[in-house]
Length: 426
Image (cartoon, rainbow, N blue to C red; front, side):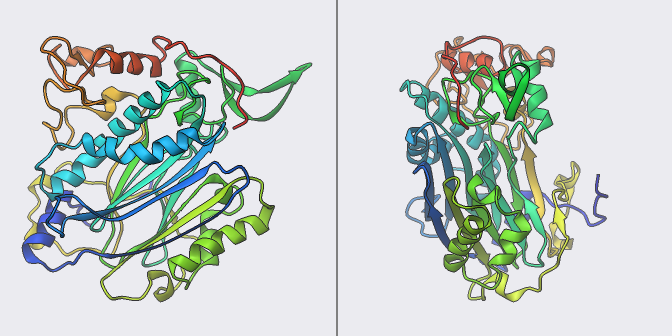
């Protein structure tokens, strides 16, 4: 593990309050470009800039970017693109200030992903999709991901950070352990006579990913619970590259960033796609979004910094548990990327725990996932059946409706929702 930086970490609330109180830091300028080449017609993108967090104020804005890589058809990708953002926003309580709203995002993203998956499965379609979903509010970037589409960040000084997780069974040992411990099987396709070919897959079903939205035909061990990472950039900014696996199967992160250095994002995105296709041919849908997060009226970050090689970082400075007592008047913002939050557990009791920064985020008589009203006494605690459930009382929330409790138990291998198993090409 990398050594912890000697410079003290600072909580999100201190960073945001300092910016607002002293008005020293303006919101960044967001520039973006996107491109793609289609093989199957199953990749989709979402780009929404200057969304209003508080309707009508014209100031509290955020931007949303998403890449959806469908399989077995594009129905799941289309549905997710159309509904995911609204489901995330519906899980955020109204009347939160800026720091509370940003702190609520990781939990709301988990609820939004699960609700989107649950609602899509009610349609009875077998399509599925990977998702890399990015929300930028000020200098804070929050990324939620399931599957093998990915998001990388290059900071202003040329360091590369991975903001998403790869849920391919071939590369993710933790997910293999999760599936097998829940009763699933992981193995390669058996062609007979003991010969095994292709990537590792989850059985029943045969999907080579452990997380996605949709895929109702491949078993409950394929869950929609996203890995979520939230970071705060320095005011020098940075560049995000968000791509489907059509790019990442051909180009490592450093090569993707190197090939478009000095280009504005609207030129960088098609160039990355071109490089990926030239490297290995158009074997899959190949989609890319490039986002530059820039100081106001400054040139593109990738054109202004000197490249530094071999500086791949997956570790960040974590927020100190004692940071709430920090005196922000003594704080000088470092020119680094600060990790505010990261969690990838598939267990809802760990994603909706009571120590969450917004402790009263969920209303007492509202399902934490689907936001439907629950009559008193009918809600089921998220901690029921959890390994540490003895620490909690039956009335400790947040709570789930009976339908979402069934979904939770199915994802944890405790029951089946009656999916039909069949092979999958992904």
